[in-house]
Image 1 (tube, protein in one colour):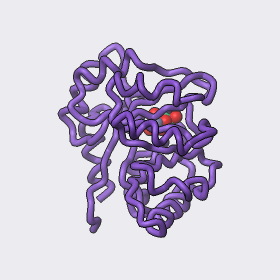
Image 2 (cartoon, rainbow, N blue to C red):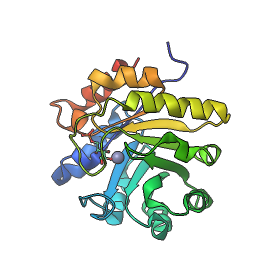
Image 3 (tube, protein in one colour):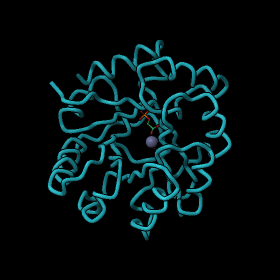
Length: 221
Ligand code: DX5
Ligand code: ZN
């Protein structure tokens, strides 16, 4: 038994953008907890997704927190704009920030929760001096840039390391995991210490996305 339930954050990257309003309403109705919104700049990652105007539209309908995952260079230039567009949680990549501590303070001073994402190759020790300052650690379980990729098995070990780091520093950050997640690995991820599961294709490519969300929540019990 777990002491706190797992949160599920559907990634709209895999949604049908011609029916975006309906997709947002589906997430509103479902057992999902957050909207996960992936922003890619074609520089930090080899793909371009969507940005501020689309997030502002989603925000008009969303009745759950908007968790914005910035896969962009120089995220500090846009933090205030993402706040305006509706981000409740703003996550930057450790690899994209020369002054990560400053970037985290900036996000918090704008009134958002601050997250830091780690690419699969980035060691957990990178977070040692900031773990008490952040609200979310986003552990990438694929190389960022695309939906529908294969889950990297080493992630379980990494989640355990983050869990230990949080404990050692008496910190309270949530551990969010992103990429290649479905009911087949949800339970093991939660057992390793994950609090938030992001899923794109496992939800939106399913014939019944609401059921898929419920299954992820249950699969993780
Ligand atoms: C990958 C994104 C993910 C992606 C997950 O760069 O950060 O949020 O949408 O998609 P799936 O669940 O299909 O791996
Ligand atoms: Zn993401």
